[in-house]
Image 1 (cartoon, one colour):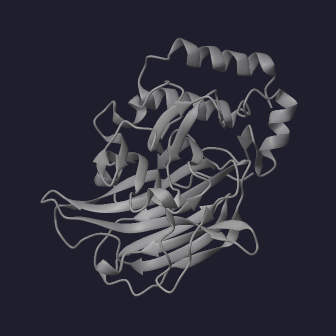
Image 2 (cartoon, rainbow, N blue to C red; image 1 turned 90 degrees about the vertical axis):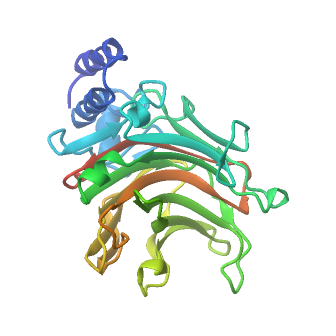
Length: 315
């Protein structure tokens, strides 16, 4: 592992280029992580320890994909959302019932509260208490350029969930509570939009755990019920979620999901896109839901990467 001087030089490079392109900044962060300089201001020895584990509050385990395979990345170190919308290839949304708002009911902002690498991350905060029903708040970052240009890609994001959350109530119709955290929409230029693949955050009130549920839209003819992850979702530390998403119609799609490098879902031969020549997919990471405790529901995301190959490199 490099010493503090080497990591300091990388940090100085980031400061020098704070106004350069978002991809260049993201690749600087990638370089820092590959050289063991990630992790919320840890020393060299502390970084080495955290990289060999599943990650602590200041930094997660594993490494980020080599720059040669990364085609887009966002570290939030620009202090704004230019990594998402600076090139017109994505955006950030704060919505209430799908109407843009500027209130505290739906917040997406660059924050220094938590950071996996560097000093910043994206903070999501949405109002979700029962008294707010039937409103549904959404805070969301989106990329559409890369999935439109390449239908088979790997999408990686690091989550920090401060505390256990409860999604309630459960009933015969799965209840009114839900939390959409990671999803793909199938969109056509003609305006047809479908929510094709979704990772929901769910809760087990008896075991007091959270976990992911994978949902594939039945609108596309998928006859697969919601699937529960065999691995609990941690809270109070950074953890990684990576999805290989092949956006395709007519049973030619593929969905594979890993949590901290462990595969939790593998669904070949599924339909993930509409059967139209102008249809393509959007990637969204978001806090979007209702009937969740605590309210506001808050979590953070950092070091997002879109790649042509696996992002997780072990840890």
